[in-house]
Figure (tube, rainbow, N blue to C red):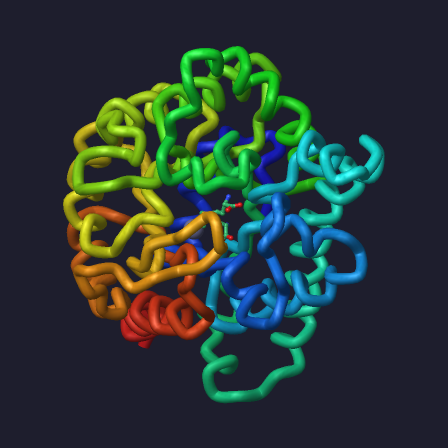
Length: 341
Ligand SMILES: C[S+](C)CC[C@H](N)C(=O)O
Ligand SMILES: N[C@@H](CCS)C(=O)O
Ligand SMILES: [Zn+2]
């Protein structure tokens, strides 16, 4: 399955049709690396694992999410930028190699998984529809705030000196490298403000990028992204961008998701995606997560309600695990299986 020669939107519609109407996104990536023992208290956060000695760990997390039932896995490039790598003493060429590597590792994981599917004979794998489900590699693009490595993607205030032009110049090269490396999709994620959404939209147009993209915002309540810009305005920018095939929210507390789906749907008829975090609060100084005062239960039981509200792609963000994704896949593929019988 490829988008070459196909309009981005029809490519994605076909993908969703093949999935049976709803698709499963993977779960927290960096926090899963940490659960496996990686120390990510670093300016590069998860991109630290792109140095070759840790590619096995990156591949392992991708495989765990594929085995849990994901249709879309996001690469380790969230906080991987040439600028960030250079600040750590890597050369430009080494930075380019690590960005490309993020896509290659995800592709390797997909191949290994497909091989396992042809050999595996467990009951779950015998479900033909599940076994043959389409799988896409989405190149993760974290915000400028992620590169700042101070939790800025949860605040979204870059100051007056940062303009649309600054952000386009910042992201241009990495986006082109990730596209060139063969990603099926570009996942612009944890977007904290409308300035950065505008920059992404202009960048896709200026560079004539045909790879489908999604825009996903981090939000602080049911109507606003973390900067205070309204989700309606942000989703409207995404709606106007030809290459954008899905719009939604990620790394946001589960309790806001239902309201946010309604707000996004007012701005666009494109497919809506949601992949909330665990609802815990991130402390950037110590790279730690603390329980929020409002307790958050496991959000898997809400998936069918969120689907009824109009979302069609579901996954998890920080501090969610393959267990969360397995629950979502069972909610989605359980229904598909019923339909097939
Ligand atoms: C989505 S937040 C938890 C990402 C981490 C942040 N960019 C940092 O480096 O601290
Ligand atoms: N895809 C990234 C998003 C962080 S908000 C991750 O899961 O680590
Ligand atoms: Zn997150």
